[in-house]
Image (cartoon, rainbow, N blue to C red):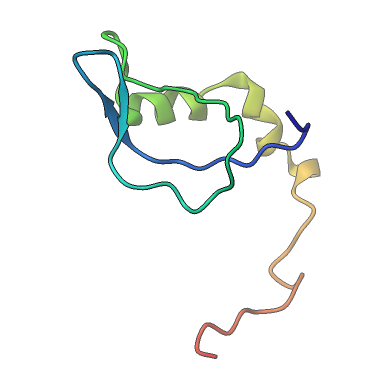
Length: 84
């Protein structure tokens, strides 16, 4: 496999025979080997609100509250005109 990977998110389900069935077709891709990561809720999975709360309270992000890290102002950059 190459060192650069591109991800496609698509939903599906696992059948009674433990086969993965996609809910929609993949985009047109040439035949190739791929990596598949299957994500499913755990029995003890926390809600999205609980996850966001835990991330917001994580000490790893305390640096974002440091005034020394606030290096940009509203005068930086240029406005985006969404009407064009």
